[in-house]
Image (cartoon, rainbow over all chains, first blue to last red; front, side, top):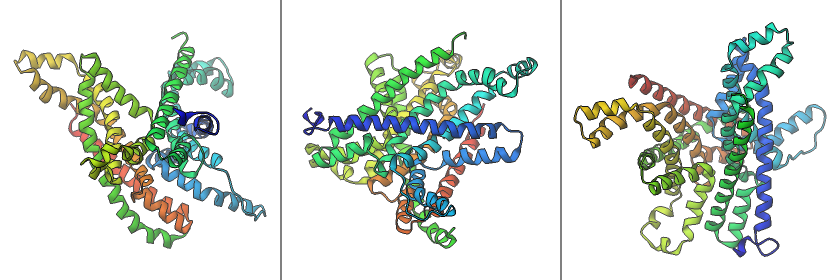
Length: 230
Length: 223
């Protein structure tokens, strides 16, 4: 237990900060994923075949390629790509992006592919009559979506989004290979310096279990809230 | 785009893909047995057995695969009695550690898939078996298991593809699988995009084949 003490003698405060980092990366990645989903879901549902194709390539490639490979692409290629864009604007200095940004972007793009599929499924399972009724009532296109389709979509999407959240939360452990100090990386450091890997990795497992358990409780509450009237 | 690098790295990555496929097939076979065993335990009426099986699947589904590999590869070596036992022959090899972790992980997901398949079997089918005078054991092996396997094919197909992606974590315990070799080539040439295209292409090709095999099996065993 003294290994987990707070302060200089133990790893408690380091692991606590690492847990906050895992939560921060997961939430950032989830939000980046939502913004990708906001772009690609309309493309998936579009009438134009070429737009469908773009969205299908995104979701198929990301869901068929290992997360670790995507992370390596961003880790080794991220600053190169940004420097290339900057050089077009006449900036030729070396740019280094930090591990948090690279990591949340890599995980965010993966999480976005799953979210896109969830939102597409949710919108497609809304009753056709709802779209027609919105049109008949003379709502503008924006209002149709915002007031009528969106709330119903949320209700249908929440159970599956909770799966996406679990996947995203667990995927953040892979960012440890880039050196970002989240739960996995901190356990690796602690295990290395105390020569007690069994304890620290098991403790990491407990932390992840705690995070998934607590987030499930929270999401269940949301589900009840958005299912009012059903 | 460095086309030459892409052509040169292709045979190396293809060789590494064989390692990936080996890891995948061995852990899927072992995982299927573990999954079936725990699915049966989950259906047991004994509360303790039931809770034990549920706990197993909850822990392995609730923690990242990376933690599981690290506990088995780095953690278990710390236990003195294990290091002196015959098990150490297996546990000192990263290859077997990876397979144990993958098999336990996929076993947890498979047990959930099979459990829900067992529970959706219509009672009428079992009753029909009983009224024909077939023993409970034979009903289970010859009627319930084949139907459950057919029911769970689509979900199991997804699990195979998730596991294919999971095998990439073997590279974190020094194994040179497809991702491991891709990372090595990226870090020596600093051409991430080219290598990603080739390695990702191989992964997508394997996914495509698995997808089609499952689709064929679904068609063949549909009723």
